[in-house]
Amino acid sequence: MLQDERRSEPRAKAAYQITFECFRHGVKISQGFARTINVSEHGALVEMPCAIDLDASLILSINAPFYMLVIQGNVVHSRQISPTAYHIGVRLTNCIEGNWDHLKVDVRKRMENGVED
Image 1: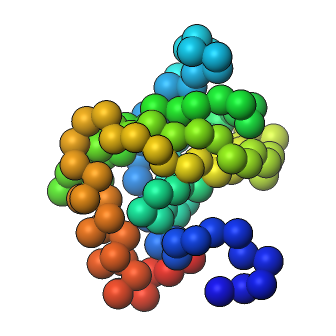
Image 2: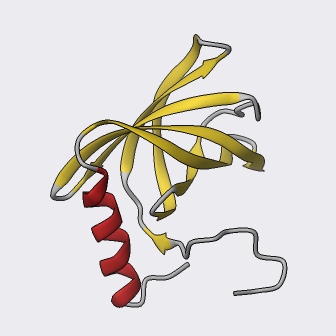
């Protein structure tokens, strides 16, 4: 792991189409479609069409090839990558629907197959 690396878990490349709902102080402020760039067992880098504040939380609906997962997370970083796209780092905190183990197995398989990011 690189010296300036802050992640405690390795990331695997994974381009899932997702839907999101964004909440701030418990109030829904936006929703839409996005895609993951990479995932770990407890985090994701998501490409979104809008900026998200660091005090926001997200509900992500991940539609992977063999499972569906609705998971909650907190925004830990946000940066603009183009005039219409943002990379949002999300710490995944709570599974709302589905089985979190499916995501963990998926990440591990991707890592074993050399799709580390």
